[in-house]
Amino acid sequence: MEMKNFIQKYNDIIDYELCDQIIKEADENHFKSATTGDGNVSDYRNCIAKPLSDKFDKSIFEVVAKSLRKYCETFKWCEFGLNIEDTGYQHLFYKGSNRGEYKMHTDHFDLHPRVLSCSMILNDNYDGGDFVFFDEQYLVKKKKGSVIMFPSNFCFPHAVTPVTNGDRHSIITWIR
Image (cartoon, rainbow, N blue to C red; front, side, top):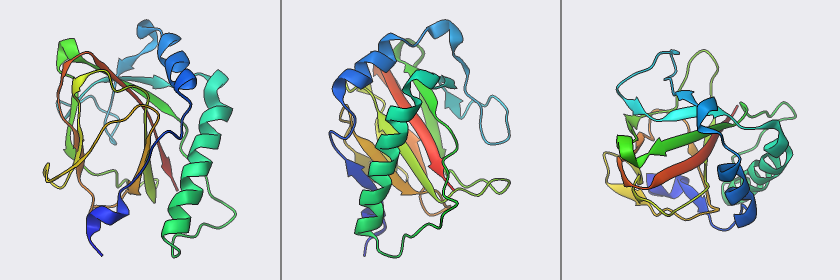
């Protein structure tokens, strides 16, 4: 099996109206410079972030749960015990006017080990901002309402290329 097979994309799993509502209600003034795992702002990551509004928590939890079930159906070895949890939801905003990006990195984090990464694409009306893996050798095509799920370990380096026009909105969480 090829490594890229562990990167799963589920189209149309988030209702488009929910995507639009999350973007519409996101007040740019509540976003802060996104940090990396060590809590610092880095030139590796040029985007702004904020916790997702509690108003959307239940809906996004259901999206993550549905995606996780699909992932575990595909990979039978992927079983979680009763203590499964996500890390909460971050709304990421990559501004085209700032060439927002997140350079190649992994989601491995020793302090709070992550098993799976989950990125939810809220819009696709922008240029650039591609979700790429393996030094840009594998590109996941953007599609509004889709979820991308993949192992969080060192074997899955990924990036968001610079947004060149428009703005990119996504929600991220990790399963541990």
